[in-house]
Image 1: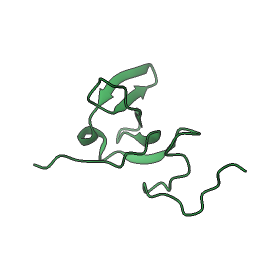
Image 2: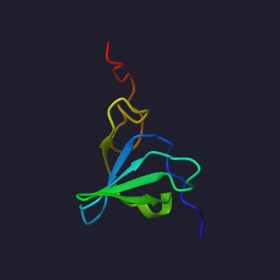
Image 3: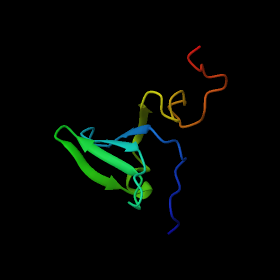
Length: 83
């Protein structure tokens, strides 16, 4: 089984299949897992790329590197820089 490697778009947000949790790519060294997961009660900890790979991309944290990405995970061509 190969290791899943998701794009390194800090700030990208994914929604769990049960629609009750969000995962945000927000690395926190020295923690090995990159996705901070939260539900309606708060943070539930960090998860691996493998765990959130099938979750739907729903957006990005404003002003993060992922802001302006297309929901399919690709960068938008000519994305506005806010000016």
